[in-house]
Length: 537
Image (cartoon, rainbow, N blue to C red; front, side, top):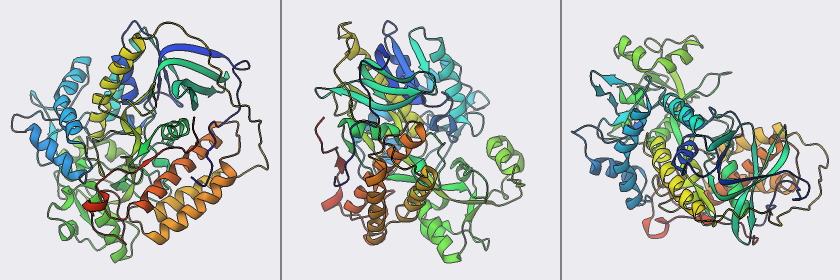
């Protein structure tokens, strides 16, 4: 890369910082990370590091549910084919088939742990979402599946005697020696920098939606895990594929709340400013088309009507059913004076889920020895170019188990021969003139939304890379002293890879739409684009 990416964000020396030793280090406290912790042999020590409270993750905010073949009328083959079709021919069929077949086992496990999924009589209530041809979405508390699943999982992790959770701790970088991951350098306000040495390390840090101005992701989703893996020399791929959720609440001054796809599964319509239902004009599946199709249709309709949003309309549905099925969405809209049973909900697309990330194999092994990864931080082959609705919590559960077991086996095979490696970054602090980090961050988010959003083209991407190169030249070499600066550096690093990938892929596929190359080109582009940091580690 013409713009240098420093190996480590901050200076450190092993004789000047505290040290901590554990068998397995897990970076990230979402569903994938916590499920991995529960799969580790109880005889091994585990440290889970999360930069906020453990409840703050994309997993916790997931509304729709978990896709699983549960009904006797459903078939594994159908779920597999739906996933492959949505993925734009870039899914790994073997991965998809394995994850889909594991789904009922993971659902039953959650039930056994005490998860209160919604029922109709004695049977699990199953919803439908875009891209699925059968009712197979298991949900909880109407539209708060993530919160309920995380409640049970967090409780179980906190009961595990071998697992410690370090909250409000920022993972600065992975520690590497002789091409092997040895743990991580972390920071918190109480202890400062600490070198955490581990036999095996698991990344489960989630996505990067905060790189965009419009996003459903919480503040913590700044692409940190992808950035630390990249700086350590691991391969990243599919970075051009950011999924945009079609329906994000769009009210001036309000947070960009997700309006679950399940609303359309229950029969909600998308209408424009004139009250016209427009999705049948774009796709025969109408509101239940995959997310990339619906997002593109909404953006096109906004442009046609010269209006900043479209509307989600549930007013033709049974009011009691709507209130019972979507209590969380109803409460959020009520804060802005909207009754979802009577009023149209203003929505537009927002960055939602990163299909790309750290390359992993079927067990969750990365290209860097000693490092594993699971969940949204990865490119596993499950989602391809466009994730099928409600396959994300499923991936976190299945890969969490796999990566936990695999890392556990690897750690158990290593002797308790803990020692400090001669890993250091002697580069001195160089704070330079103070920078307005908030201004740069806002400029980055606006640039990405404008030039690398739902639709892209060569001119916009060229402008984006020019701006990013300029910012990277004077921001990346800086050595900041708190997470505000470190997050910005991670966001710039990952945003730049996303733009480079989008420039390289001269076709449209899944969530990547090039208006100057509107067709898919299997002959040239039915493949993954991968990146590694050029400097050897």
